[in-house]
Length: 193
Image 1 (tube, rainbow, N blue to C red):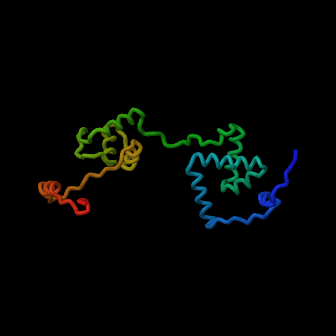
Image 2: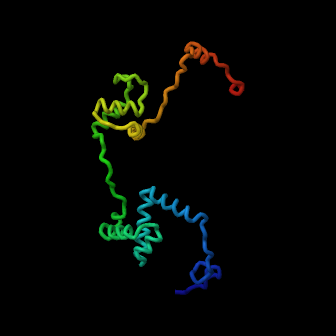
Image 3: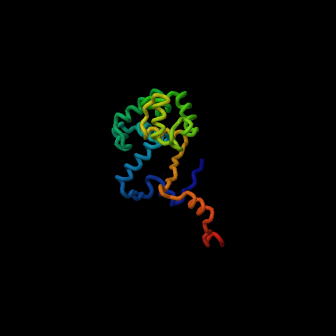
């Protein structure tokens, strides 16, 4: 096999060639924290982070050195290595984390979802729109569940509802004058052209 002579600029891409200038990142400490937060936000990024840790251990670095480089504790790296040895790549994936058990059963959740699609007045309430406080009361009355107002607001978001606020009524306003104004409002000059 013949080896052609490489151009002179190629030597800059080898270790023996040109010496590379040290790169600097401004606000290094702040950026380190920001990058670690970004990694912790995404399940996929956390998996990749663990892969990098395992790769560094495979390259011969100690768990202590890898922990220092990745901003983790050495026992965390050891746990990753044990999981990888036991379960392979699947051992590095995020698994279900324990949390508070759901307070509503699937049947109660479906029934509540159906209730929220109905008008509150159908249940004998005076309000025109559902809100966290009313849902909390409704769950207590209908299902014997005690959920706080904030938790009920999260339920709305989880079910895909958006916040709607009723229009305020001015106490001493004449409703006939308001309706007449709506019908006879002048068109502005901008919209005429």
